[in-house]
Image (cartoon, rainbow, N blue to C red; front, top):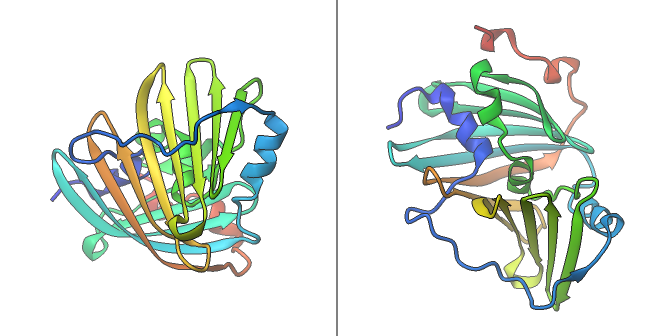
Length: 235
């Protein structure tokens, strides 16, 4: 069992990798062709839910040090705000963060803020949401039947999405930085179109995170203190 469950959240927001650290090729149809940022942004917005969501999940995290599990909660407020909480087995190791778009406004443990959200597209993909390309990104697209793929290139960083509909209903996101794979997320959707499971993979250090969603419903109005760091988390 991994000790110090209050340090699990950074791994949850990072990405994971399968035990061997390898990746199967992305199922991208041939023929990526130039597209526009506006078209990609319009597509990304279609992955957002229609209303604010209350999401509950169970997680299992594994790396070379061992494994740990627990449960978590994500309160999603459109268009791009999430209050994220996790707790380990038997209520140990609580941690939380408030993410807006590509920024963690607060997170606990404080010293792990940078580790907490090392890559936002992978974090959002865990919830079944794609991020739009940033200003100046080179955008390419291809589609073939039930599969649509996008590629966003900004400087030395590449983000690729594959959205598969039909029986294989899933969203895959992969990030490369400087030509090296950072990580990959594969989120599978249930018959209701909501995320059912998500697997987060990171290559170095090798790790794997599995999420199983057991509640995803329209949220009631969020309390004003939802977005405020809880006193119980401050050191």
